[in-house]
Length: 72
Image (cartoon, rainbow, N blue to C red; front, side, top):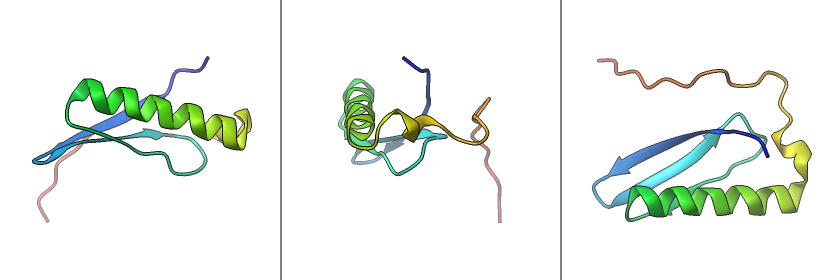
């Protein structure tokens, strides 16, 4: 077991979630926070089954994740 940081975005039509700091692309979708979290966890398990545990091996682990807002 490894703890991952997961970004969850709320959109007008539902939620999208993705983990940070892994090799490859993993995305979950859902109509609620609980649904998207369950879906992204399922997608991560599938990703690990497909690509092996080395998919979680990254050069530098993500220590913290932040959300910032900027006006451009």
